[in-house]
Amino acid sequence: MHAKKRLVATAMATAACLGAYAVPAVAASGPDNEVSRGVTIPSFYNPPAELPAANGTLIRTEPLPLDLSLPGLEGPLPGRATRLMYKSTDSNGKPVAVTGAYIEPSTAWSGDGPRPLVAFASGTMGQGDQCAPSLALQHPLQINTGTVSLGYEDLAIYRLLAKGVAVALTDYAGLGATDRLHTYVNRVDEAHAVLDAARAAHTVPGASIGPDSRVGLYGYSEGGGATAAAAELQSSYAPDVPLSGTYAGAPPADLTTVMKGIDGSGLAGALGWSINGFLQSDPALADFADSQINAAGKAALADLSTMCVGDAVLGYGFKKSSSWTTSGKPISEVIAAAPEVQAVLDAQRIGKLKPSGPVRVATGVADDIVVHSQVRQLAVDWCDKGANVTYKPLRLPNLGDRTLINHLTPAIADQGSAISWLTDRLAGEPTASNCATMPFQP
Image (cartoon, rainbow, N blue to C red; front, top):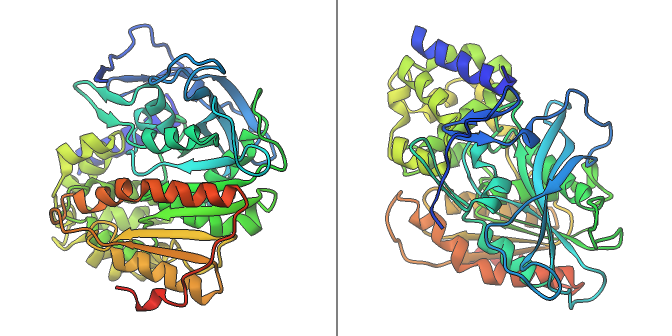
């Protein structure tokens, strides 16, 4: 039994004691294949027993067929994709295998210098292995009786490819790779996975990027938190990655605030993913969880551990965490009363370090899921540290309280501007910070 299956089985036992693409389970799946909610995970995603020493080292590759692909004179459009597994390091300093993809664009790069690279960090996809962003490139819409997942980030990836920018996509630690749970919104795990994806991309067979290629980071929501954290950790963890610019859209920089926004919203299931992830990375929290989370909550955590976003919205949308606790209080109040647990969330705060290179921070002012105020505070914190910050508040109307619409709409509304800003940085064009005026903007 895979380690991840043992984690889920243990959680289940604990709870008991206390274009549309229909994805079938593959009958021929053997002992090396995990089946997650009816979807067979290719054996490629099973990490080997021994991992290489250097971060960013490729472990294995294989061709990745893109679902949306057309023949072109210079190769398939928008590009030729390769599935990746590479070595990274988790927040406990332990080696971890991370999967993802590299896409070599068919379009030529017309900017200054050699073809650049964007390390792309996806927004929330879920915690089940079938939700891995690299699988979503192959099957943008997966629907069966067990799961619903949507590759909603594919559009932004294809727009980057259309500009001649190579893309390295990370699945993050534990999403796709079958040996552990995805450590959702763990800033160190995700930052390392993003930076090591950029390293790994340079050694993909046939990649046209080189040591002088500029590197950018792109992410929204969970991905925005990952790229923001990566920009902060680049100088200490990956100084060899020549970072030219970072887009961090709607980053969950302050998890204490974000937790309150998510609770009772359409994305309430994300609370379960956070708890599952921190129980894995901080096992000392197990006693706290055992005493403060009731049987219904433990069953929900086990259920959510194999879910994608679509499943979680349908199954747990608008649920309140007070139904998961032994006290009947919201998770945020329970955590606030436990200093050792609150310290874990505080350690995830983004904004304590100066980011490398220019950063563009965007947020919808009506966003009540990844709350606008804490994103703006991140920009202020970075400005105070002397960073080159472009802060962009998107003044969109309130389109539905706590329904996810206020959170998702800015991602589309800002996508073109965000990609243009980032490609300008990849072309070597300078940008001026708006820190001097940003604190006075609503």
